[in-house]
Length: 103
Image (cartoon, rainbow, N blue to C red; front, side, top):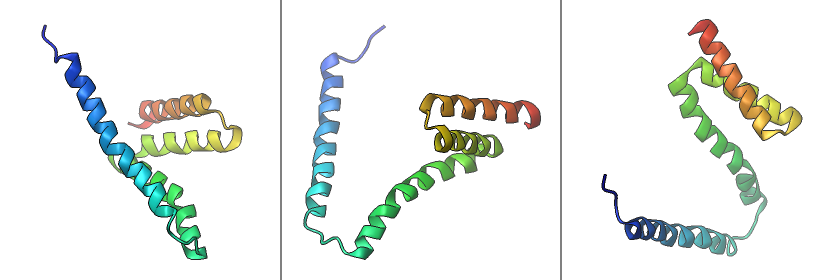
């Protein structure tokens, strides 16, 4: 069994880091020069919610009801108890339960 040389893997990781770091650092630098008006502040406060919806919506569309129930159950547990692993387990159980009962 042959595999790629380890140096190629290391080079790929370094290339990704070299591309990622300037983008992130540049964003922080750029925002340092933007005046934080009330409108900009509201946009920045809404961004995390928009990212969550943009991440979750395609999953629900692709996977359907089991995914929606799992995300709702896991999100509810996170909201109430703030336990990551517990929320993940409840979400998986909810999806398995929906699949076992209806799909």
